[in-house]
Length: 55
Image 1: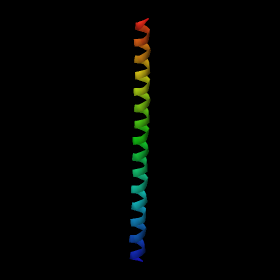
Image 2: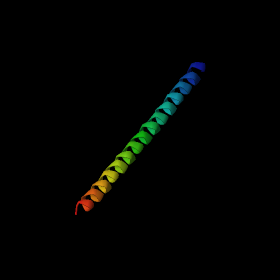
Image 3: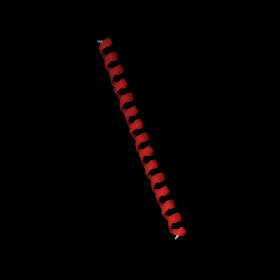
Image 4: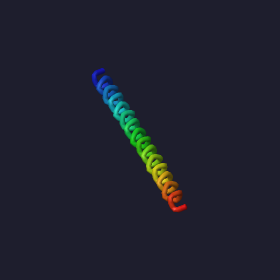
């Protein structure tokens, strides 16, 4: 009985760690995507500004 309880605890803890890890990785990817969007948008705006100055 004790072995079963310990096993359930271990499995539950493992699942919790896995879920937290996926959350962390997902959040990291989201931040990365937002950061790439921001940088890409900033470069696009800068390019438009510089090209409009040339005219």
